[in-house]
Image (cartoon, rainbow, N blue to C red; front, side, top):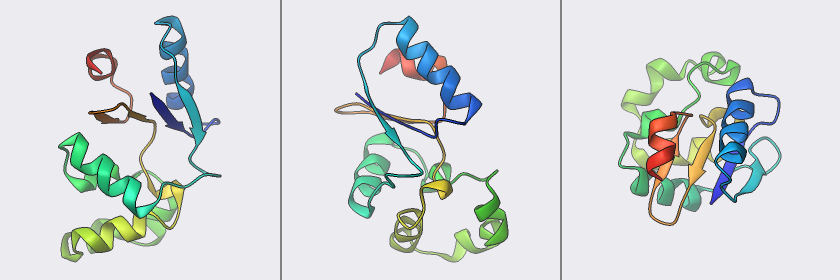
Length: 114
């Protein structure tokens, strides 16, 4: 299991605590220093079954500065994935990546299923 987070994020800290309380083994990856690649993001998007917009950190400063709320609807999926791959701070966190499932954000019920 791959746990992708930003260590200073309180939601990520809660998610890490949940993983530890449930004795789930994971590999932690700091999204700020080890940004997901285009190929990883594409694979995770496909596994998640979620709209690509859910992978964007809509409350982040970069998202707002780039005015992505207005730009995303006119961008292709490939353009959005390439943009996400440029900076980990654009990606919603935490991400939990299992062999056949991916969860974006921390929702206990979803994580329990994985």
